[in-house]
Amino acid sequence: MLAQRGSGLPPGAAIVPVTILTGFLGAGKTTLLNRVLTESHGARLAVIVNEFGELGVDGALVGDDASSVIELANGCVCCATRGQLLPSLYRLLADDRQLDGILIETSGLADPFPVVEELAHSTLADHARLDGVIAVIDALNFDRNLDSAEAAYQQIVGADILLVNKTDLVAADIPGRIAKGVRTLNAHARIVDCARCDVPLEILFDAPRASSCAAQRSIEVEHDQRHGGFASAVLAVDEPLSGDRLAAWLGDLPASVFRAKGFVRLQEADGVVEVSAVGTRYVLQPAPRDAAKAVTGLVVIGRAMPIADLRQSLAACA
Image (cartoon, rainbow, N blue to C red):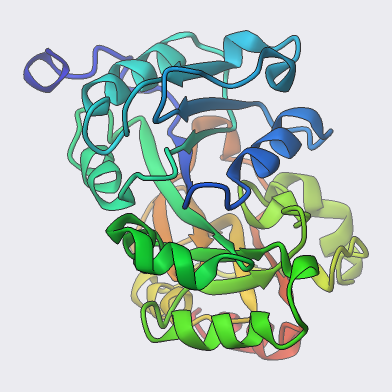
């Protein structure tokens, strides 16, 4: 029905970023999801949880905000419950909660590619856009999982960010060997080692909005918030940029940059343009109407980033 009659949502509705969280059985997706639902990150997030079995997510995991979580049980979202994904997205978007993002946690046996394709070609594409695919890897059972199912292979291949989890349970050389192995399957994804999925949520879902960075930009200092070696910095953008040059810049970001987001003005377009990049995936689109007066600039989040080079190369896009 949605495909034939359109989304039914207002044409001026804000575009909500969607993050797909994938990973093989027991890799740690629920641990990460629990952090997203319980930590104070300031973002208004909705979650679609896909369970392979009939048992859904424990109610204690959801807490008091159960209306923000939709469960798709008894089948993988890439096949058996595939027809339920778009109606679930529609319900969240039509609820007018001014969401900052939607997280889709797939079953541990799901192939992320059909989900990506469905989002890209649905009538909801103008209201919900794919922001990135995150795959959690079980460092303790990496070889066994990869040998057990095609889904484990597809999850690695389709990811923009790979979280090598449970590094505290393996020998010190194992994470490096895993990184080397997955590089043969996915040469472009960012790789983060972690234990108990303890990673900065900003790199997964949403960097600080450019409009909130005015004070940082005015004194041109790097963000002081660090976690696990990650840091963020604000790249000021004073002049309109060439769209082609900016696209090339985003596509050529160093592997140390995991996330980039903000607002810029383009020489080829009127108004402010929103920039969002996760790993090697990036989107340039008209900014929401209320962002017209936002401070222009990009926030980059990563580890050991060449900030001076990034500032210089971004300025060269003008």
